[in-house]
Amino acid sequence: MHPDHRTSTARFPVTVDATLRAAGWHPGRWDIKQAELWADSLREHTSPAGHRHAVFPAAVEAWAEFGGLRVTPSGPGRQVAPVTLDLNPLHGLHMARTLADLGRALDTDVSPLGAETDQNGLLAIDAGGRVYALDHTGDWYLGADIDQALGALVSGIEPTRLTAG
Image (cartoon, rainbow, N blue to C red):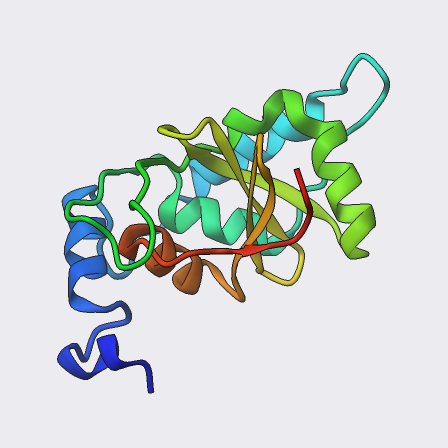
C-alpha cells in the first residue's frame, strides 16, 4: 500500500482528495451530458490533414467525472512542482494528429483529457484508461488510471518519460 493511503479511507490520498474537492469534485460526480457534448465536438472535428479524434468509453467516463474541473494544487510537491489542471478535453481539439501519433506509438487510441495550464502541456487518456502528458519536452506517462494520474499531478510526483524531446 502506498504510504499516502494510510491516512485516508477515501479513494485519493487526503491532500489530493482535498484539492479535488476544492475544485468541485465529489464522489459520485457524473455529468454525462457534458461528456457527450465534448465527445460530439471531438468526433466532428477533422484536422486540415484529415486527422480525427478517437472517442472511447475510458475517455467519456473520465470527462463525466472530472471534466470541467480547474484543479489548483497547493504546496511544493514531492518531487516536482504540482501543476494547475484544466480538465476540459477541448484543449486538445487541434491536437488530433499529435494524439493519433502517440496512439500509434502506444498501439492504442488516445483522446484529449485536458491541459496543464502552467506548462502548456496536454493531458491525454488512452483506451485502457492510462493517462499521459504531452509538452515541449516530450511525452510522459502519468499513471495506469485517472486516479493515479491525478494523484501524481496534484502531489508533484515526477512522471515517467516516454520519449525524448
